[in-house]
Every structure is written in C-alpha cells, then in structure tokens.
Length: 156
Image (cartoon, rainbow, N blue to C red):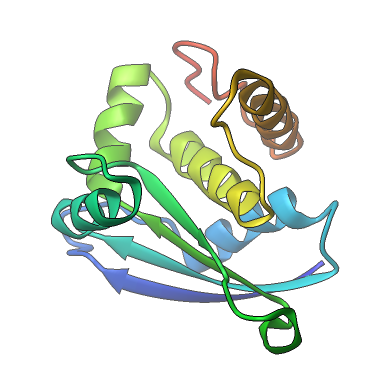
C-alpha cells in the first residue's frame, strides 16, 4: 500500500509530543491497507482552540476533541487517491492517555487508525456500526503490536 501523507504541524511541538511522520504513516497504512492500494491524505496537528472550533462548526459539539476526520468531498473524477483530512489535538491525546492508563504512543496510533477508518467511510453513530469499527480498530492495533485500545489500562 502506498501512502502520501501531508503532515501539517500547527501546534507548539516544544510543549507537545508529536510522533514522527513515519510513525503516523505506518499506523494509517495499517488502517487503510485492506481497502486501498494507494492513498493520499493530510494529517493536521492542532492546538485545542482550533479543534474546538472545528468540533463546534462540523459536529455542533462544544470543546476540544481528540481527532476529527473529514472525508474528501471532491467528485470522484477529481479526487483520485485523496481520501481527506485527519485533524488531531495532542493536548487532548496526552490527557486521555493518562486518564485511560495507556502509553501516549499507543493512543496516537489508535487515533490515526480511528481517523483512517473514518476516511474510508466507517462510523460509530449507531451501536452496530460502533461495534464493527471497534472490532476493526482492535484487530489493526494488534497487527501493530498494541493492546486492545478499548481495554481499560492498556499500557502498550
């Protein structure tokens, strides 16, 4: 699977630990590999204020969130391999990793997998979709040598 990843850092990297582009690409490729031969996407790493604004505008939910995915809305003849954008907030990920007893690396990996699946059209709006998406995420995380992301206190 070939992946072209545009990484945009709109965050103070001295204050937040952001994985290397290569790591992010590997996690995303694992999520996309079964369904794509090649893909292009953007990962934008942002401060809490930016993701809160996006969360309010597009999901009508107040406050910052961990990750948002925006599927490409280009017509298929123009889209090519471009899947869309993943926007992630390291401040929220850092807090959640501590609260959930996970390593920060494992949580970043999970959010990149989660965001990648959203770009493929998977969602968790209803219970059946949520269970299917969680099953897929867990299987992908295991291939990456991480624990079940939905298991409490999964430190790896």
